[in-house]
Structure formats: structure tokens, C-alpha cells
Image (cartoon, rainbow, N blue to C red; front, side, top):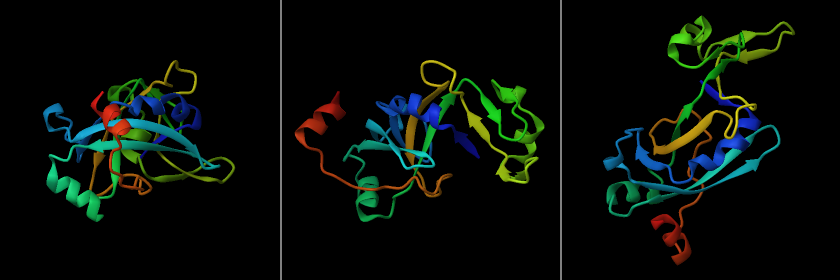
Length: 170
């Protein structure tokens, strides 16, 4: 499980723009299916959702058909981080060699804090204090069969207007 604070998401969401669109995180540039051409932060109260506009090239006919028919409608993202914080112990790790035992062996498990509130052991990506993007750079969005975050779903399919097509080409 990975997580982002509200502050980090607000600082970093625009880094999605110009990222690649892949299938199942096969991050090989020649296998890119298109580009992310826009991103907006949507405050939903308890959290911030990031909506992205993905231009998937029509030359990938099977993928486009699956998207348009609703057969393919879930996404996942990839990012780079300067470091992560363990939600259980607060340990900062700049890479895998510095990770605490909670992240190495208990990630995704539940725990209770001193007040009796239940939480999940997760990597909190980046930190609000890091400039300019909270230590997070979003690099891609992938069409996936099984998303890590079930809310990462296709909301709309649209035909590109001349303006959108020009932005995608740029």
C-alpha cells in the first residue's frame, strides 16, 4: 500500500502532465500507448482525487476498443519518490535498503495506535516540506486489469477536439 498526503498531492499532481500511458506498467517508451495531457486536483472533502486526461493513440485499436466498450476501465499510476515514511513508526527511507521492518514485512497489514484507532501499514510517499513537488513525480498511468486503488477508474471517453488534439500532439 502506498499513500500520499493532501499537501503532496496538491504539489505533485501536475507532474502527471506529459507522462506516458502504458498497459500493466510495462514502462518501455516504445510501448507507450499515448500521453497524459492534463491533470486536475479535485477536493472531495476527506481526500483529494487527481483526475487525468489520457490521450490513447487510436493506432492501438484493440486497446481503444476495450476502453470504449468498458472492458478496460481501471488504471494505476507510476511515480518516483525522494523517500517514503512508514505510517506505523514514522521512519523515513530514501530507498529500499533504508526501509524499516514494518514496510519490508507488514505492508498492507492493520495496526492500532496508542488511542486505539486502526490504521494500515503503508508507505507515505514524499513529504509536504519538500519543494517543489513534495518529493513525488508522477511519471505514467497504466491501463490495468486489477488496480491497487479501486477508485482509479475511467470516468468518460471523449473524442478529441481540435484543441485537445493539438495539446496531445504538443
